[in-house]
Amino acid sequence: MRSQPFTYELPLSGGLPSVWDSHTTRRLSSMKGQYLDQAAYETMLAREDTLLYEVYEIKRPEAAGELLQGISFIHPGKVGDEYFMTKGHFHQILDTGEVYYCLSGQGLMVTETPEGDTQVLEFRPGRVLYVLPRWAHRSVNTSPTEDLVFYFVYPANAGHDYGTIEQKGFRKLVVERDGQPTVIDNPRWKPG
Ligand code: S6P
Ligand code: ZN
Image (cartoon, rainbow, N blue to C red):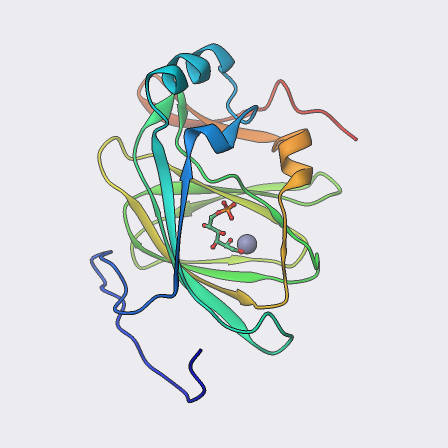
């Protein structure tokens, strides 16, 4: 791990960063129960365990004061009418925020608090999205052809709580209606 201040390049066009330490890939099989159209999900999975998104991260000690950073690439596609998206999470230390900077593509970020406030933010190249502490976040690629690419930075000790979203889902979903990305209430959202 680097022990001196360092620099690296982040292509504004959305290409790979010049350095990274870990490359995480998420496939369809890791999203069981998350997509609304379960039949479309099963049919698609039976055909292929499609690669949905990839995260390149620079390792730092997971200690207060350090920052974790990297780039996510959300690939284009849909399961039924619902766009490819990240699992989404609360931070384990709930009171930690995060900064996203969109490098290329288009999409929506679905956010919500444990109390049920919801907000949907739009990704655009050159736009910063600030996720307040306490807000769960999921990134959705609404382009039919292009990757959604963004840089992110968050406190290294934040940790990830995936379980809450895996059990309850998000209150809002992003689906295609009449060819347009549309935010709908999640009919399968369950409290508690
Ligand atoms: C981490 C940050 C992003 C996501 C990444 C994948 O706090 O929000 O790096 O990890 O975009 O999303 P997820 O929900 O699978 O971690
Ligand atoms: Zn996060």
